[in-house]
Image (cartoon, rainbow, N blue to C red; front, side, top):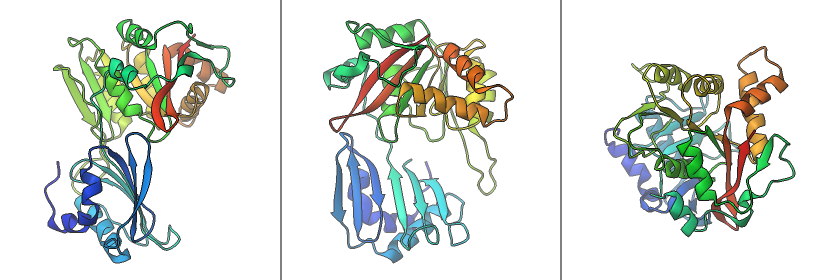
Length: 323
């Protein structure tokens, strides 16, 4: 955790109630004088906050840049950083906006849910085992009479590689935490994240965190950490999210002695999750053809879990076995 900063604290005061609320996951500032907040259930509300003037927002941006050893100005108008308590923040200032300071804050809100808690909370929608029209033949839906919790527990127990797919703020990390609870306690886990969010209960666990280059510090990518993790004898690798060149390293890892690994990806359906993963692989410059990459991915994955919103609630929409 970063050291307290009285200047940053001062400019964060108008956001204090939203940052402190346990059920608020996201805070958006589109223009001075207003705040939008999103709750765990998916409800989004707007509030008038006169104290958030344009000057205050600019000073807030500058203080966030200062504590993260970065800069933000008209020459460098984008800033991705973390607040002292771990909240992720993205800031954009002019000339990259239409004239206002825009801020999005993603809070680290993890519900202590297990799979049974998901069931009790309505986290498995009725269509969870029904195949969508966009799902290709190699993806088959599970028997409609099967219990989704039993399917997921069986996949963990038999060390199937699991990809959790969903849009932004769909609840992928919360669901990944629920799956971690099903992994036997005696297994050794290596976690790799951009921001520490996962909360495994395992004693034999190492958490690795990718780091942006800052003053006096090295830049360590997710791909770098995956390479290190492979030399740390994990039983399973838990990758917070696939978003770049680490896609290739992760696929190699789960095919060379680390089955039962888990990760997440941004996609709107199981088939698009495979397409997105294939695109990330091809962007590394591999000479493999699209069809070969897709086939390799299908052979590497055991299960795809699609997370989304159903009637305003985050829920598991689809579960697919990959053949």
